[in-house]
Image (cartoon, rainbow, N blue to C red):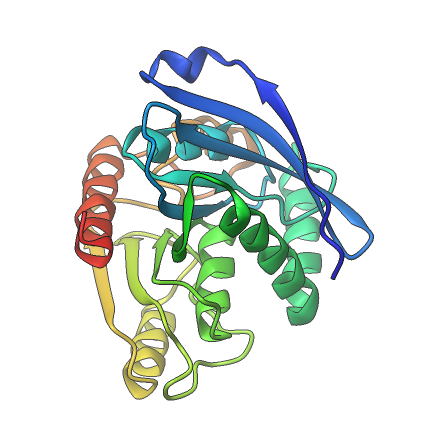
Length: 261
C-alpha cells in the first residue's frame, strides 16, 4: 500500500481549547486520496497515545473533527479518518447508506483504508506508536469494532451507538484491543438479539469487553445535530445530552486505565 502525506494547517473556532492545533492531512489508500484531520496539543512535548476517530455514515464532517479536537484537549493525538475517500460526505440518508454499505461490504477495502490512517497516525512525531486506540460513531463504531475483530494493533476501541454486526466474527486470541461499547437503550438499529449475539461473540473470543447502556437514549445520541436530522428524514435518531456526557466520561476513564495516564 502506498501512503503519501500532506499536512495543511487549519485554524478553526474550536481552537479555543488552549494549545490545540488542527490540520488537514491527505494520504492514500492504494490509489484513493483520503482527507483526514489531525488534532493535538502543541504545548505537550512528549509522545502520547494516538486515537483514530471514525465518522458516522454521513462521512468525514465537522462533527468528527470536533471529537478529534476534544480528544486533543485531553492530551491525546487524534486523527479523524476518512473512510469514503476524498472527504466525501452525504446530505441524505440514501447517499449515506450507499457510501457506508460500499465501505462495509468489502472487508479488504475497509481494512486498507483504516490501516492507511493508522500508519499516518503512528508516524506522527507527537505519537507513541505503541499506544494506539480507535473510537467510532454509528457506522464508525462498526468499523472500529470490525478492525478489532481483524486483529488490528489497537490497545482499545470505543464504539458510540455503533453497529454491532460482524463482517467476520472474532476468533479466540485474535482481538488485541480492550473494548468499550456505549449503547442507547432505545436504539432501534440494534435488536436484543443483536446485542446478545455480540456479547456471546466477544465472550467466546475472550475479549475484554465493557458494555454500557444509557436509559432513554436512541441511536446517534452523542450528536447534537441528530434530533433535527431525525425530524427531517423521519429517522429514529436524537441527541441525548445526559448520555452524551456520561459516555464521553466513560471513555475517558477507560482510556486512563488502558494507557495508565
